[in-house]
Amino acid sequence: MPTYITTPIYYVNAQPHLGHAYTTIITDTYSRFRRLAGDTVRFQTGTDEHGEKIAEAAAKADSSPRAYVDTIAALFQETWPLLNVQPDYIIRTTDANHVETVQRILDQVHRQGDIYFSEYAGLYCRGCERFLTDKELVEGKCPDHLVEPEPIAEQNYFFRMSKYQDWLIDHIKKHPEFITPERYRNEVLAFLDEPLEDLCISRPTSRLTWGIPLPFDRNFVTYVWFDALINYLTGIGYPDDPLFTEYWPVAEHVIAKDILKPHAIYWPTMLKSMGLEPFRRLHVHGYWNVDSTKMSKSLGNVIRPRELVEEYGVDPVRYFLLREMSFGLDASFSSDAILARQNADLANDLGNLFSRSLTMIGKYAQGRLPRLGTDLLQEGDRELQEALQHMATEYAAEMNAFRFHKALQKVWEVISLLNRYIVVNAPWELAKEPHQQARLQTVLALLGGSLWMIAVVLKPVMPETAEKMARALGMEEAFSSATLDKVGNWEAVPPEATLAEVPQLFPRMEKKKEAAAPPQGTKKAAASGLIDFAQFKALELRVAQVKAAQAVKKSDRLLKLTLNAPEERTVVAGIAQSYTPEELIDKKVVLVANLQPAKLMGIVSEGMVLAAKEPLEDGTERLRLLFVDPAMSPGSTIS
Image 1: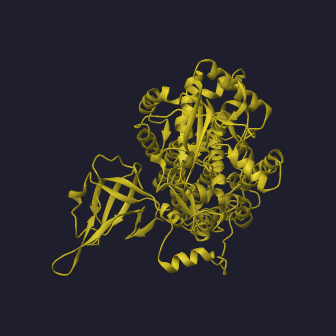
Image 2: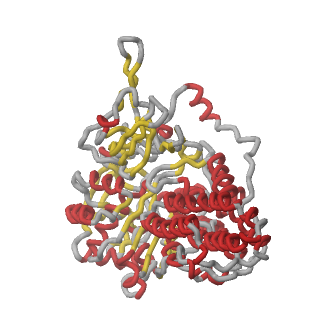
């Protein structure tokens, strides 16, 4: 089965940062996973190199646009090997084949009457490089760039995007997997409730020359989005290359939420106009904040991929980004968080398990993995084997659904089980008893085979670590050709493999003693007690529906809530003295969705529901939840 997976092409008006790294790592991980599942895979990334912001950035750098984009595009291409990202194709929109494809499509759409010439007056945001409607403004400003757009009146070419509005609404409703997670599907449908305007697809050469000329009017260049989106076709040889025939029907795009509208509205309508079926799935992820604050040059908190890898190593970075972010939601990067994952999940759980297991195989089995005798299995052994089979099934389902953090949770549940298995079976005690030698060999065989299976499922996420594990187990050859169906299949474990030198997979890391002082502007804001708009935007407030509620044992204050937001999550709330569980079912509340998870009474709480304190006559207070309109869909953004 073929898989075609793409990142967005990255705009080269700035250097690669954490957001670029995350998008590309998850796309690389998914491509590796699909190969592990037996697919033929095409993984594409690239750079978007035309438009006004590029021309402005080049001018500020005292460079020509061509020289500027060559420099920044090279930085992106140099970043991917640092992150162990292996795309099959890297496209640049300045490539000759892409220019030819864009002009070919423009000519086709123009000839069939879906492009027309008109004069337009509107509010233009240079940061967005597009006209904004009044509805999109916040207090008269662009919500993304926090500047007032400037009035512009000029003649341009327009794409009849409105012609395809009803078709697009129908397609989204008939194909619920078209935009994931569901909250972004709902967001697009809400936008399409209003009449769709036609899309301005040109810029006059009187104010911009750095772009692809329109084939039917050389006085205009192509609007950067109409140019950029076509890269997904150029990269597979549209329209004549066999790659196009093989891969376009299964195309999947990965993007950040800031470019949802172009990908979910512009792009499908463009494809419809061309007579092509739309892509299969659009996967939309949230933002990475830094210490709960949006990344910003002015705050000096932009994180570069090279610095991350140099400090923590490539596999810990890949693991952290995939495990820490719930796909679709925002997440916060901090040195404390990545150190916690490094020391707890990687060094303690996986690294310690691997080291002690191989040490015992070396000591008690002369460095050769014992052959597993199925007639000697006990109940706990079969439970371990069943857990590995369930892990493989659940891991595959979560990876296919882009719930990478949950896929890794399934793996770590088995890692925890293996650590307990060692404690329960105590191989060091078995080794002392002559009549327990057969039992000892069974335990060691199960440990070694389980670790090989763990290495196989970690191959897409931490390729270097997985390879180290397989090499130390003496199973490198079988590992290199292993597919996902081998996990849980004990006949696939290479028999009597000879161990190699056991590496330390993950050393423990200490927190740096000195932290950089916060920027001066941040100190002033904190001292005043005020927050700016960017800080407010860091809060992600969503509508959540209560699907289940129950009292928390040994607590007269806490309720455990199961929320639909629209993905399921658990929240522990201190409202038991104000509400019974029964009266909360199906109520819609306000959820702080990007709050760092916390453990309360042994339960991991994945957010917080908002409540107000109501003064009572006896001088006490009662908590009252903030309920929202029952018509609101779970997952809707509150802003």
